[in-house]
Image (cartoon, rainbow, N blue to C red; front, side, top):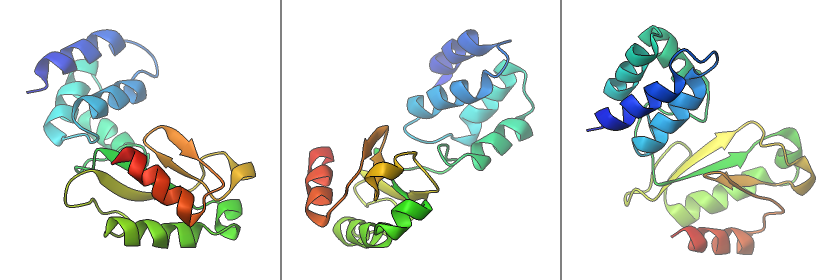
Length: 151
């Protein structure tokens, strides 16, 4: 199913020092926001990296997942500034609006709600990311508008 895409990724990153992580990002996009074991095995083999090393990277970094996730990944920042500025209330609003808890995916597969330790925008706390887009100065009304944009 992903064989051709994996071959292309391997060609770009084979022998490149530090190429495993960017290759895994591409593989995750190819596979629908997660790294299926079979696809990760093929990538590791193609890059001549031990599978346990690739799997360790996939499970260490929060930007990777080895379980299926939604189309849109929502990451709520829990850094101290975001926490102090109301991250918990942001999480509660998202859980209520989406009908899922942290670590869960909506039944329609559109959203997965996750937490992250820092997204580097402390000046606009509280903040969250949806996929690669960062949103700060969050309010309940703004959260609803942002979600509607991604629906």
